[in-house]
Image 1: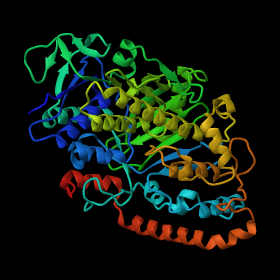
Image 2 (image 1 turned 135 degrees about the horizontal axis):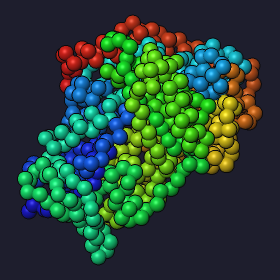
Image 3 (image 1 turned 60 degrees about the vertical axis):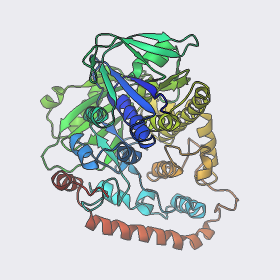
Length: 557
């Protein structure tokens, strides 16, 4: 006997809405009997609200997401102006810009000694007494060479979504949203309604029964509809939070006392030449208040300045952005002043509850923080995937799933916020109150303070993350921790004594003892250098590979 399909209604489009729709619809098709999908997805998108579309960076998880929803990698990269992202590069974060070569990388490939506490402890001690000539990343991760030379993470013979060097993407958010929309409607059976939601109707138990819309253009029915019923409603309406916020009154849990930034200015600029190199990293350059992102797509760069309005006004922020463009592009003053600048304001934080009754918030409706480590799209992927894997649901078990979802998403948000704060806490910049206040103990989450104390005595290990499948693995903490320590003898954590190790079995105190660990450290460094040199000789540039992909495509397997 055929059971009635669960009706999932997504309110809001954009990247959050269409990516959520694609993940849920594709999963339902793959896990339902033929021609009997257990879940039907309807998406209502306002024709009056434009996509933010300032450019996005992803984590490597996006490769698997795109594969699962049935999009070919070549099509994705061609249609979304996408490029390869292999790392985040941080410039001028450790000290004021008077010190040259203040930069380090947080790549996607793991360091070769990430899980070896003895070698990590030996490295820390050796670095503190200036026995290490290169950075942690350069010593133990071959990917730094590829990223800094604008080389690709794969070859034209590498099948789609597979890699030689781990990677995510840089993409045009507006083009990505448009591609997802087309794929959802044409390939995944998502019903699309172009309309504004004007009212929300409840059942007696306060679950949402339906949403009332204004005159609509229904892609599946020429007759206009005025009411859309559903079993589960997903709020992807952005910061408006039409369902979770306006209807249910779930408050935003502000994190501005931890992450100060609440504003951004974004621009798009051309490359100097059609064949200009496409950089492999999202570049984050710290300013006296905030930081500038610089993302290279195939046809252009996306540049933006993220700042805290409590410390800097709009006019001064615009001057900072224009100053960066003068120093880091070939545009003249007139061209810079004529650029169209998009102003964004946000409250850093997340909802006190993400899943309430039969309503789930995903994307900016769930929360938003500064895009320092490209967590926004990854959170959408994780949220939508968990919802998809739990469907279909009945009213009996939905509260149980909601509780699981809320616990997990709260863990994700708290973990991400602490990781972003780590970048600020480790900085030695004192050129503004912004940086000084960012190191004040009252602005540091308790869990991060505990880890900072622990890491004065032992290197970061996977035991330090107390829940499964975090967005940022312990290797990410190692890259940032050791990256922030590598120049100007910044061997401290949050105004404390120099990093040292204690008398545990996984630590090394005596400098004399370190000599026995120098050989295995040197072996790791040598192996890494050899692999890096092989790849530097073998890998094409990002632009060369993207050109070949557009011509020939990638093998599907």
